[in-house]
Length: 253
Ligand SMILES: NC(=O)c1ccc[n+]([C@@H]2O[C@H](COP(=O)([O-])OP(=O)(O)OC[C@H]3O[C@@H](n4cnc5c(N)ncnc54)[C@H](OP(=O)(O)O)[C@@H]3O)[C@@H](O)[C@H]2O)c1
Image (cartoon, rainbow, N blue to C red):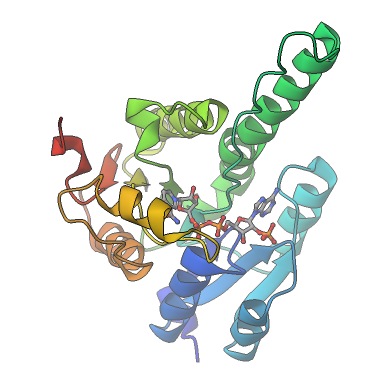
């Protein structure tokens, strides 16, 4: 059961994997959890049974975001917002010469990927943080904004360029908001490299991904949870991008 005195934590996109793990653990530690999801999952049912408030929201749609913000009316204060919702969309392959695809079609397809990445990773956190600011400032224990970004925000990506650029935008928002909101609200990002595989990742992909870091493991979502707790318990860390990457920055050729 949650203890309202530990405060309300919002996690976006908590129906599965990292978000679900963190939401369940924080709920068990006595926070009141409020999460968003798009697809109903067994994880959402379990969170509801554990006492979390689960709200369906597509954070790329302004109407849906507004309905989500309206649903927060009963809560006077927010202890933390964790921006976890994400979509790992690859850039589209360029159409081969002579394929007949028009320039206009190519531009529209590329723009759709770019806009989708910016909307979920940069625009949604920007809008939500601004809308939720009065409730964050109302938290008597101080408050945290935590952005889940990605290792590729600092090094780029050959196949996920729009994704990497959108996570870099989110890291930049971390800096601006930290400057604006200190000392009442701490604002930080966690930048993971590999945390966990997708079910359909094959053995070759897994081996290649593991070999990219010094630690050579997929550490699992509890590493993210421990980093979130570290930030929640800190009275001093703000405006930082915390690498969670197994030493990947040192795995040089
Ligand atoms: N897993 C890793 O190894 C890894 C590595 C680097 C960074 N990260 C970052 O860590 C975070 C968690 O990773 P993960 O692997 O657990 O992510 P995930 O499995 O892809 O889950 C992301 C969640 O975001 C939700 N979501 C997507 N689009 C949404 C939208 N428009 N509105 C609302 N919710 C939306 C999804 O809900 P639906 O399924 O219902 O659409 C899903 O539950 C992400 O920010 C990710 O970028 C993860």
